[in-house]
Image (cartoon, rainbow, N blue to C red; front, top):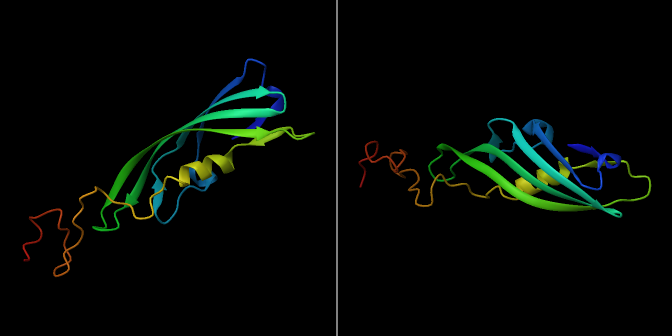
Length: 136
């Protein structure tokens, strides 16, 4: 999401955009966005500083590190970023900061649920489903 500085009026500027996760480079080995990412931005300019309040919504698919089942997590993130305007600066690119703030929430070891029992070390079945594994 790129914003032209001269479009930011004294009363501020509101923008809504649907972004492709591939363009934002959000998909990793750990997480994969299912659909587009909805971004709402509110920009306000005071002298040489632009404050951007962002709301990002989407859904991410991850694989549980214990049972290897895929699960979906909703992403609802609010954050603010300040940009110092330099002389001659005409465009602010929000994409790198949006990407960084979203990826900071990715877990290092995703779990489908906190009490996930993982895989059986004997038969390899998912121990969260007792009908599949009857090992002792």
